[in-house]
Amino acid sequence: MAASGSCEKKVNGSDSPKSQKPPLNREGSSEKGKWVKLNVGGTYFLTTTTTLCREPDSFLFRLCQEDPDLHSDKDEQGAYLIDRDPTYFGPVLNYLRHGKLVINKDLAEEGVLEEAEFYNIRSLIKACKDRIRERDVRRSQAPVKYVYRVLQCHEDELTQMVSTMSDGWKFEQLINIGSSYNYGNEDQAEFLCVVSREYDNTLNGVVETQTDTEKVKELRERGSRM
Image: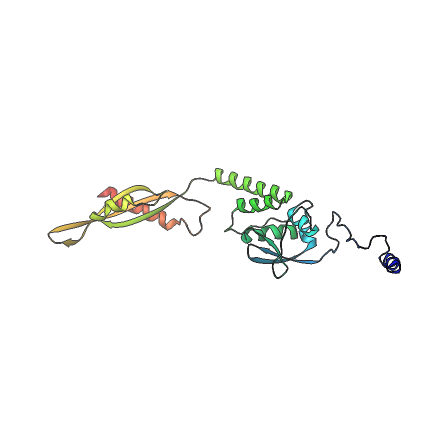
């Protein structure tokens, strides 16, 4: 038994039979450049410890350090499990890679800010807040624009159409274009109903064209002559 103990000391180079892992420094992990797999909300991301440790004191930095105070699990593939929205994790990870905030048009800045706060990436939090502030200033200074719609209906459909109009749409003008057909012994009048709503720059697929505006003007002039 004594021989075994002395041999153990000689091999390990210390009085303790257990070897200790080298501590991680503030620059990153002890295995700099090691690949890490993350499972964020069911979507896999592959990156390096160098990228994840870019921001000291962040959640991802502590994850690479295997901080005992940070409870983290791994899936069957060895990927760290993170219960967050993977859609917004992409901009976060890319920011750590190259230091630039790039957000797709279909994503909200507030969503990226929420993730930046969760991961405690302070420089990204500041970048998101600056971006939101600049966006709000641009919106407040932009002139108000409107989108117009021209709806055609029969006399007996008019009341229902106006009462079921979507939120945000406002009635502008009603134009009687005469009778198009005879139902029984009664003529059924036809109307054009012009409605409008404030144009929202954040909506995708809603475009106000010069043709739409000219058409509305033409219909209004036509209605005023009747």
